[in-house]
Length: 260
Ligand SMILES: C[S@@+](CC[C@H](N)C(=O)[O-])C[C@H]1O[C@@H](n2cnc3c(N)ncnc32)[C@H](O)[C@@H]1O
Image (cartoon, rainbow, N blue to C red):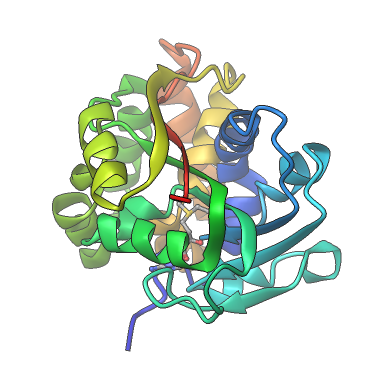
């Protein structure tokens, strides 16, 4: 059975991590370039950051998929239909969707080509496929300062996160590797761009809330009493505030089509 490493992460994700992931989702969906989106599959949908840009871009219907029930049920009343499933084995018939979006989920796979092939299977010929991952070269001293403060206060990266960073994330984290994967999955019209994204995070409080909203911190934060967490957050804000740079994460974007 596959473990849900995002269990318990939804509130932090929705209130914090979204500050960075939502602007990137907007940029990802913009890569559809006005193409009719129709019935869209949002894989690794999480708390739903891609849904508003998809609707704004004209998606007629959206279906979310995620391994994490917790992430999918965040704000459930306002969300499209969704199913808990693995992107490697999607519970849909061939050619069910007109487009698919995979925001920061293919980087969780040790077989990203297999993930792209599965997305192609459930989309119709010619359908648009959009994906994003962080670049392997993405660096931020401010983000590292937040992690350092967490370590000083007893956090250590969970084993699943170390495994992800070692065995999955590096596989797609460059324009060259994303292009190779898309070609190996027999996608066409492959366009890959590596870009620094201005996510509008210029305030140390926003950077800290983004970072502490990520799943690798969720269990540790949940175990802290509120006053301890407030002190850790204040220390992280102080550490970042000394030399805050606007946060501009480097992202690899894929836009492609399922072969006709
Ligand atoms: C980094 S979060 C991104 C969430 C959302 N797309 C966003 O941009 O905010 C990755 C999401 O992918 C989900 N996920 C990880 N591996 C998955 C898999 N094999 N199949 C489906 N979902 C997966 C996680 O549960 C998590 O919700």
